[in-house]
Image 1 (cartoon, rainbow, N blue to C red):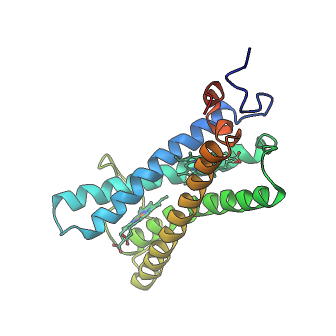
Image 2 (image 1 turned 90 degrees about the vertical axis):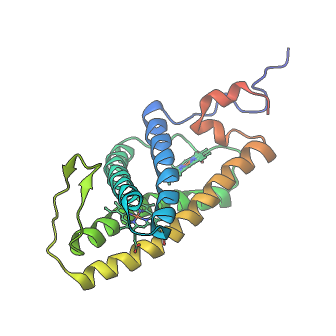
Length: 191
Ligand code: HEM
Ligand code: HEM
């Protein structure tokens, strides 16, 4: 009998549940946060814009907390051995993209926080609590952080596009086990 998992290598290790939870929670939040950022900056001032700003900033701070915990956890829990389907060049390229993604997931919320705190703007966590401002008002610093934030958001969008494109390429064109490392249930399917 032909196994339905025949197109993937069932002996290949996959990320464990903690790594997968960190990955997919962060992925959903980032994929929500970016379009919110784009839309909120196009709107006229008003209640809708205020709500989107608070939502963007609060989700961004959540991502910062999650990423700090994730990096700490990841440093003490190495990833499973890389897929044997990848060439040495692909291993290198994907490691670089993953590292850059981690760096951006720290740099973007920090630059956002500095922009808002040093700009003297209100900052709450989902309107439930005030977020402490660790900086005095400093407009040049706020402007610098704004430039960094608006530049880095292009970097994160580009890396995410490359990352998702690569995952889909492995899944649907090369039919290898790379996607199943982050979604182990996929091993059961034949495509
Ligand atoms: C992973 C985290 C984050 C990502 C990926 C991100 C991404 C973005 C994006 C895509 C925009 C729209 C840029 C544009 O349309 O030109 C934006 C704008 C903005 N973000 Fe974030 N952001 C993050 C975290 C934060 C945090 C934590 C804060 C504040 C606490 C923040 C504050 C802002 C503000 C105030 C703007 C508007 C800037 C302006 O209009 O000049 N962001 N962000
Ligand atoms: C539909 C969206 C996504 C898919 C299908 C996807 C898929 C994957 C897969 C298959 C891996 C394992 C790669 C390997 O083992 O070589 C992975 C790892 C990773 N992904 Fe994603 N991803 C998505 C979204 C995102 C987003 C939005 C981010 C961050 C902004 C992200 C950040 C990462 C990071 C940092 C790793 C490396 C994990 C580690 O080794 O610690 N992913 N992703």
